Image (cartoon, rainbow, N blue to C red; front, side, top):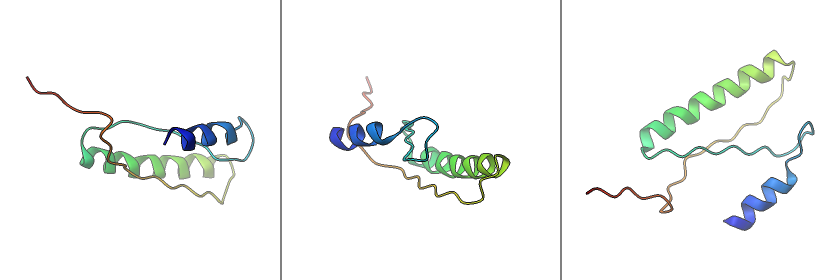
Length: 72
């Protein structure tokens, strides 16, 4: 997973048309799905305001064991 993240980071260049990466951590799947839809809508709105008619956005929620909640 780290190798993929490094590759994405190296391909991303400010001001150039390339792969962009943004990550958020949510501990609830429902909140993640809601936020995912919000992000897609916001990005399409911003692109249209800047005059970009074509935009491909792909967002997803990934389940991970990297973060765990300990209840005491």
